[in-house]
Length: 191
Image 1 (cartoon, rainbow, N blue to C red):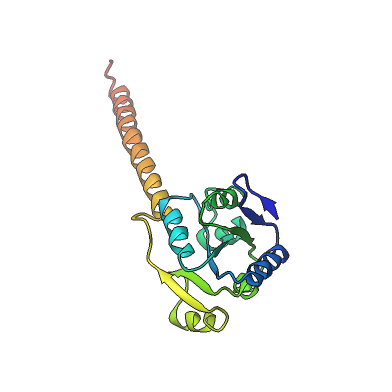
Image 2: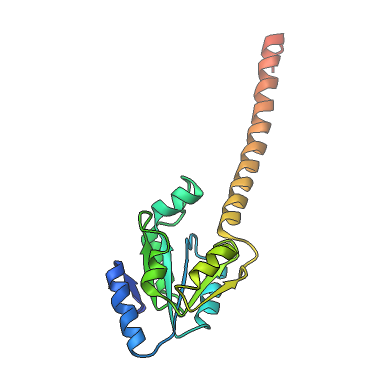
């Protein structure tokens, strides 16, 4: 395990997670697990982790790898590389362990390894059938509402739209001037 500057831990692999979980169970701690991309960490992510921690003593956060996010969300994502996302989450006071989830890992592998007392998810993460199946692995599955008004994807779209509008406005003005100058030259007008 790697110690983040705040003393929290980042698991380098699933063996480290297994050891960590075993130690927590031996001391009678209630383990909570949540997972996600956590791209462009924002207040909603911090609130989500704070709320998740309320369901137990130890909060483990599974973080999707860059490759896993690109496969699901497209080639422009993630905005923030996985090592930085891991470290940023490790700085949150509510988070006790952060672990990277690779693309090629079997479905629900981290959940099966941790066997959390409580699995925290969002409405978009699992359907009812999946939640029922997960309850066979976990003690309980809690679905939380979004904790911010704008998601990371929505924030990225807003930035892209604003940039496109600025470019369009600038290019439209310059293009019109260039066309007017070219037409003037064709007509033989002199400026």
